[in-house]
Length: 123
Image 1 (tube, one colour):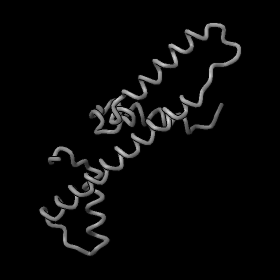
Image 2 (spheres, rainbow, N blue to C red):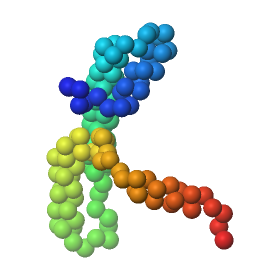
Image 3 (cartoon, helix red, strand yellow):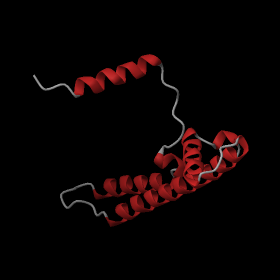
Image 4 (cartoon, rainbow, N blue to C red):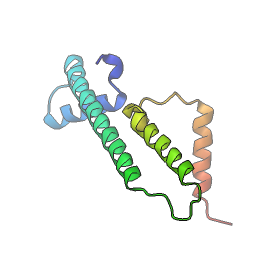
């Protein structure tokens, strides 16, 4: 893991921990704690993705074709394809967590306008 793997949230958590422990925030100490926080976050993300994938496979395994389906072979092929897709999807893609693309100022403003409109009373 290098510096690029440390997200802003890792540095925020590191600063919070240092403050809670009453430790002075030096660049070296902040870097070490942020690195540790990033390792922990990545580990938890991998665990969550593995659990999500296992749950999806379990749900698929418990499914049976609906009784009203006439093309059982087609349903079975589709089911197998879905199961293969779930089992072969990289776990990192399951959660789709990662640094998002930078949004433009216009995108931020449009989001704010939509949120404001959704909070207006209905007419």
